[in-house]
Length: 194
Image (cartoon, rainbow, N blue to C red):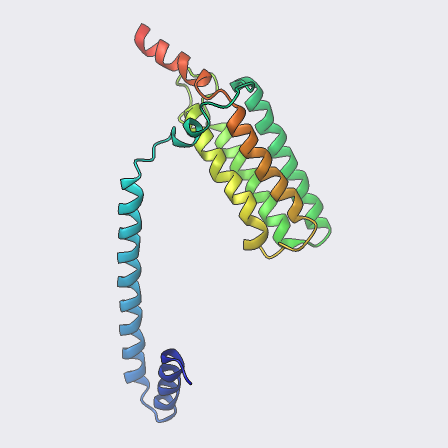
């Protein structure tokens, strides 16, 4: 039994072979417009539902507020340097070994961590645009990116995938163990004093 898409494709192919090119172009454009409109509607629905969740920059760090906190903002900064180095070296090694997908994924993760870290206000003095708590939420995004990278870049069954899965798990542990409020207190105190 043929699917609707197969029947449509065969119909289009038959019409093309009969010389109805303009008619086919018109129909394909029309269907493309329908797809675009449907995707826009889905996008609006997703946006609406996300908005209803009331997610803020502090949502992810606050989920772990009751776990023990032994990582300060200063230590977290050095962990970010180590993670950036981990992914940079992994990218180079994978590239040398011809593992293109893993090399690209590692370079992307190195860039994410380095970029967010460069703009994070670890000191809580307001000199950089990304607050320490927002950094925690972005760490969760990076952990998700690392965990999904082997599947998205086609190396899920390869040994290199373990580096990404391991780092994603490590990132969650770091998020849970970091004192996100320590990087925020000074900012609030400085605002009150001003």
